[in-house]
Length: 360
Ligand SMILES: NC(=O)c1ccc[n+]([C@@H]2O[C@H](COP(=O)([O-])OP(=O)(O)OC[C@H]3O[C@@H](n4cnc5c(N)ncnc54)[C@H](OP(=O)(O)O)[C@@H]3O)[C@@H](O)[C@H]2O)c1
Image (tube, rainbow, N blue to C red; front, side, top):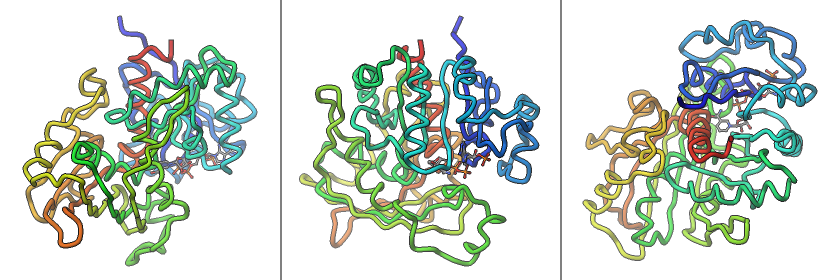
């Protein structure tokens, strides 16, 4: 019989935390046994603590409603005694998140994180499971640094990347020289709804703090190599980006321009996208999309509202591939930012870690 792992969700009341709770409802491998948030929520039932902040289109899962929230900081030891691993998605200062995640790891709890605090740590793998699952091999070195036998931290990358890095990756064989990307990012990426972010209605906000740096630097770690227990970021390709907040509830869109060392044909690109699959597909992990990249032939697709839920929000969509006058090609990408880009990507990463024995 397949092992079922006991899971804690740290930041369970947040936008990403709510997604975790819905994705874990009936999950074949993971059973939520501990929910935690800030001291403000601790001691309350989940339903009471989340209150009006519940932003999912489905009701709060029945299993979670009456669970009493724990304090992510003060109840660390208790949570560690209950779980096999935790998901973490909290809104705190970067240094506090770094300390919190390391504290759980040192309590021998694997941490699968949505936060950016450890994305730059050289021995912390930052994984898009279809692309760089090989980076999990740094975990023994990280455990050595932390002095743990089970505990470690693995992170997923920023949500903006998921709408273009999966589309550039299958084209690396043609030597990507450079790419220019503009992202059009949904308000759920800021933990907001239209009710809590009324200033976005009829508007575009041309600034998302820190997002452009992440969008340009994180792909280089994803494409990096493991050397002596650390991930050494790739030196190329150069990526330049602009990140805009747009009045969309869910789904980040990217407009991408790209040039190659060896320019492929349009058919080469379409075929590379169609045939690309990674370890999640080979292992048939429960949350893996069957087809990682979906290409839309229609001129007006992919659209956030119509296409973000492709393969339960776990596929990456592409469209409008054509030659460009300045770069070699341009195209449009789309991914669901709180599913593939956040909680869904983390659940898939946890499924990969479980399949490879990192939670045993
Ligand atoms: N939204 C996205 O699409 C997305 C995508 C990728 C990554 N992320 C990252 O995921 C993390 C969470 O994002 P979010 O959008 O879910 O944020 P959010 O909706 O603001 O939720 C934040 C969560 O953090 C908890 N929290 C705040 N202060 C805390 C403390 N001192 N101790 C323990 N818990 C505390 C909150 O609990 P209370 O309810 O008790 O305050 C809540 O559960 C962030 O690091 C974000 O950058 C988000």
